[in-house]
Structures are given as C-alpha cells and as structure tokens.
Amino acid sequence: MKRTLLAAALTLSFAQAAQAAGEAKNIIFFLGDGMGPSTITASRIYKYGEAGSLTMDTLERTARIKTYSNDAQTTDSAPSMAAYMTGVKMNNEVISMSPETVATSPGRDANGNLGVNNCAASNGASAVTILELAKAKGKAVGTITTTELTHATPATAWSHICNRNAQYHIAAQLVPGGTGFNSALGDGVDVLMGGGRNHFTPYSATNTTGRADGRNLLTELAAKGYTVAASKAEMTAATGKKFIGLYSTKSHLEYELDRTATPPLGEGASQPSLAEMTVKAMDLLSSNTNGYFLVVEGGRIDHALHGTNAKRALSDTIAFDDAIKAALDKAKLTDPTLANTLIVVTADHDHTLAFNGYGKKGNPILDINRGYRDNQPSKDADGNTYTTLVFGNGPNRPNTRASLDSATVLADNYLQETGVRLASETHGGGDVKLFASGAGAKPFKGTLDNTKVFSLLKSAFGL
Image 1 (cartoon, rainbow, N blue to C red):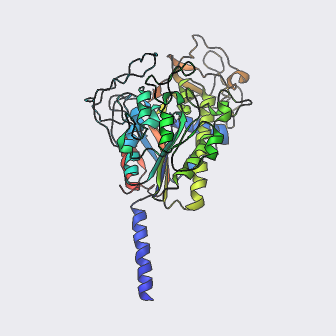
Image 2 (cartoon, one colour; image 1 turned 90 degrees about the vertical axis):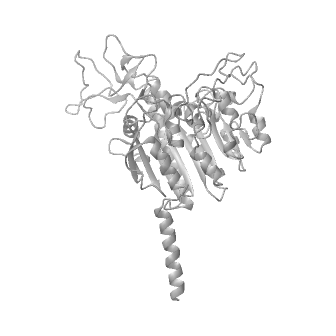
Image 3 (cartoon, rainbow, N blue to C red; image 1 turned 60 degrees about the vertical axis):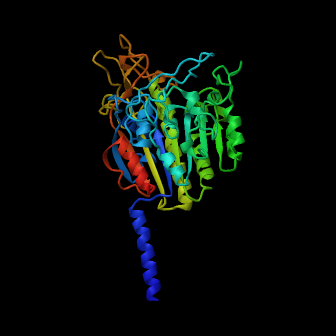
C-alpha cells in the first residue's frame, strides 16, 4: 500500500514538475494584425459596453509587447510577426531571415505581376521558426488567416524570403518536394487556410494575377495528399491530415461586416468565419497524437485601420475575439483546465487610432462625441461636432472642418477624420497587448520584447 501511495505521489510530482516547466501539448497563437490597445478598447465598447469584456480580456496573463523592428521605430507586419515566430529582429519587409538581410523588392514578370524573386542567395540566412521546430518534434502545424495565405503575417511561420511582396515564391515554399519548397517543413504544413488562390494557380485570361511559371500548386498539393477546398461547404466536409482551403480567388477574404451582409459582398457567401476555420483546423490537427501548433490571424483588422474605416476594424476584431472563444470552448471539451493547451493572443503592431474628448458612458463608440455632463454633442474650438474615434494620419483630413451628424458617422463606409494627411494611414509604434492562458502561460507578464515571446513559446513546448 505504501509503495502504491509513493508511486502515485511520484507520478503526481513528475506531472506537476512538467506543468511547472510549462510544457504544452498544443499551442494556439492568435494574432490580431494591427490590433493596438485603442482598437481593443473600442471593440469592447462597440460590442459589450464599457463594463463588458472581450474573451481575450478574460485570459489569465497579460503583458506589454515592444514591437520595433531591426531598422525602424515603427514596424511593418513582416518583421514584427517574424519576431514572434523566430526570436530574431529583422528589417522591415523581411520575412523570417537573419538581421542583416536587405529587403529587396521583387520584379515584374511577363504578365506585369511581382513574380520575379530578386533575393540573392547571399542576402541573409533563414531564421528557424517555431512552426518548423514543432514540425521537427513530430507535431502537426497549421496557419489560418483572413488575408491572402501568402501575406506577410501568415507567411512568417513557414516561409523565408527577403521581401514580403514576393508572394508567388512564398507560395512555392509550401509544396513538399516542389521547386522552391522549404524543406524544413518536412512533409509540409498540415493545415492552411486563407485567400489569394491566384498565387497558387497559373496565369490565364481569367486569372490575370496568376503564376507566370505555369505551375498549379493546388494540383501539386493534391498529389501530395492535401484536400483542397474553395468554400465553407468544402471545408466542412473535409477529412484527413492534410488540408488547404483558399476561399478567395484573387485577394483577401471579405471583411466580417461584408461577409455577413444581406446579401454578402463578393465571395463572402461561401467563406467561413474565422471562428469556423479555427474549430475546423483544431479538428484536423488534433488527429496527430503528439499535439499541434496553430497560428490564427485576424488580418483584415489591419486593412480597415489603414483605410480609416473604424467600423470594419471593430467588426473584424469582434470576429477575431469570437474565434478565440470558439477555440477555448473547443479545447476545454477535452482539456477542461487547459493543462495541455496554451492560448496566446497578441498583435504585431499598433495603429494611429485614438479616442477624443470626454464622451458620456454608453455613447456609441462610433458616434459623434457627447459630453458626460449633459449628453450634448461636444464641439471643437470652432463650434463643430466631432467623432470619439479619429486617426493620427490618413487621407481624410479636411482643410476646414464641418459639423458631423450621427447618420453620417455611423454608416458602414464612413471614414474617420485624420490629423496628418497621408495617402494611407500608417502603423503606430506603440506597445501592444498580449494575453495568455493555459500550460506555460505564467511567464507571459511584464513588458517584453516581441522576440522574447518566441523563447516562451519554445519553453512551453519543452524545446
């Protein structure tokens, strides 16, 4: 009896030690592209009110993340996401390469597309990604996004190239055994979802942004055992261990506001939500008994912010948060305390979205500002009304301001006013937030450089 109790105690002790070391079987890394603190707060108010909570707000650990790149105070998405994936600071526009790599733009192919890779072999070296390390450990890996699959943020997990715009060459790195394949991926990334099918399929009269080399990478992937899907229905029906779903022919997936419109815009009617993609990816990846690493990107938050369209940015942030909730609910069905699962949520960089005035509690966040004392429209120094949300820079800066009304500013296509006039709103250089729960979450605290997150993910996997 004593031996049995001692053995049980030792087993529990070893299990507790492993947990203390933060080893996780599964890691889901959520990245809200451009989702700075002001976007999070505005989205919370938009959906749940000032006293409410997003799902990400309820995670156990929080941290502030520094986001500067190797050569810029304000980063672009390529080096900032790559810092999470590799632990290496690199130059703006560079994807998962060494710090000295020079961002060299691709050239135009015969069809006028950016199909010529100008990255010299001597221009830097590949930086190992956490996805590649997980794959080498026998885990399943996946990347899903609402942008083109070959866009800068998702590509950093499995691609190495000197410039983010060389998307045709980024796509080729996914095909096991094919020309340009990233051999560090072993038998390939197991689950892939996003948009931008044109980067995988040949140029034609109906696919004028297709590949100039004539390759159909989707046919090649199917020959390697991948199920290839183009719609939500095809995704739902998919089984097996290898899957690629590209739900937009030429570009990104629709904004959530447009995907759920009546009728939906563009290809939105056949596109799954980010939450649906997340749950499906977890289903497919969980067939690997060694566990998995999954990247989930809410990428169009960034695009709406660049366009100074706060309504679409907030709607996509809510859809991103819904995906976090779906993942937590799914994981807890088999791992109720997240003893074997780590959930990390963060952003790659900030934007210039800012709050104005002293708005009354409960005033719609997208509306004109109304004062907390009398609930009357707030006025600028010239006597004109203004919105609570504005941007530091962007195209919509009037030379002379006029009063704004609720019907105008609450419309789907309203673009917030900006301070400095630029053709497009830029990223912001401020710190972003990180949230974490589950196995290995405790070290995610304080103010961290984005490269430190990589080492914490490695530690959580016991690498």
